[in-house]
Image (cartoon, rainbow, N blue to C red):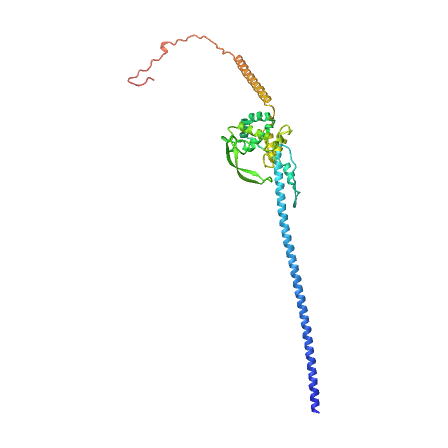
Length: 360
């Protein structure tokens, strides 16, 4: 009987123990699941927050980069606008006519209008030239010979003179001064003579680079002018009509002739604008007329000056004669008076002093 009771108690205890273990396992499993779920949610939140932070950081960086680019673009546009305004101001000083420029409106925030395109800006850009005595003396030195040579070859002397001024700095460059006399920077040799100098060339986009080149050496300026005219008329080897755009038969004005030289004779993209500015500043079109007509005009001018000088001298003489006639003779009045004789008694004898003393 006791054995059965003990066996039943053991079975009951064993069942209770098994049930208790199952309950513990279920509880631990539930807690583990909750913990894993909580950790998963936390990890997901961390990942989400990290993604948000990364996205925000990228947005901030992109915003900063965009702001920097916008500032740089505004600075470049402002610089271009200022350059255009400065160019138009110089044009007003030279031509006396106002030019259109980009306006800037400031109302809390500066609003800059879209700058002109590069081609349009270059087309509207004007060069200003200030006259000086050095250039005028240089023109007087070579003007007559350039006029005669250009007239004989049917070229524009104004363009020749403007080129000589531009290429030599009004005859002050080392290549233009004696003993070289090279006015147009023509390369090569002349009658076996040449000289080597460093020169700057344009790549065609305004960027310059320096090279060493051999230039022709002439006995005088006359040979340099003649050689230049021959070059324009004969062209290059294998292309006789290379410079035919500068001939009077093909160019209706000096502006067209200057345009024909740009990109051919010189690599400077603004070469024609500089030549036109010089021609207009120094009135070089005077040398495009027939030399005989200009000589006759000068002779007439000298005759007129001589007549004026003679007229002035005659007027001066007439003024002198009139001054002489205006002068009045000096009138002298003569009067006679009786002589008054003082009696001797009224005269006091001088005081006699001895020695070297003076008589008072």
